Structures are given as C-alpha cells and as structure tokens.
Image (cartoon, rainbow, N blue to C red; front, side):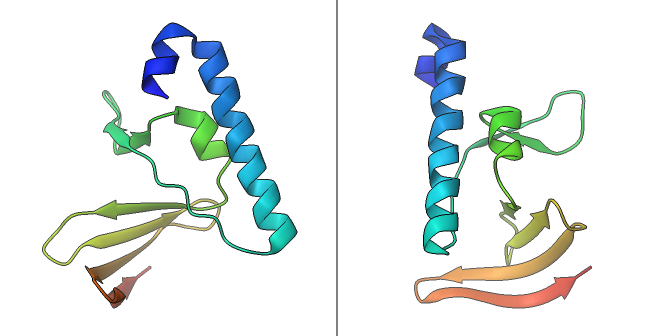
Length: 102
C-alpha cells in the first residue's frame, strides 16, 4: 500500500477501500468475523496512534482492536462502543484474558 500510495494515492486508496468492502461482504454473507491487521503510526500533534491507510481503514471496520506491548500486553476495543481495556497474554495456544477494565 505504501509503495503504491507514493506513485498513485488516489488509486491506492481506491484499491484499499475496495478490498475492505469485499471483506465486509464476505463477513456478512458467510456470517464470519474477518480480522484485518494493520500497521499504525504515532499521530503527531495528537494523542494515540492512527492506522496506515487512515480514515479508510478506520471507517470500514466495525471494531478497532489496539494491541499494546506491556509486561502482560493490553487490548483496547474501540468503535462504536465505549473504549474498554483488558490485559492479555498471547501464547502459542491462544490468548489468555487476565483483567477487564471499563
């Protein structure tokens, strides 16, 4: 995405939007969750981080899950519900929830 964005920002954003729309259609049709991973960057001049792809990614996702590396890890659920935080451990056999905070 980043390489294509430098050459043709309109085309890159159009392709990204189309891919996310197709994934949303698959999720609705098959009644399955779709997880999209994405790189983020620090929002200079603001708080927190923003996804690479910006509002296109954010607006085309029902829920945004932010993972932060801490001693135990942290999971932050955002959009459209109020923000919730949970401490987790990611292990070879899966994710273990430790503490849930509202």
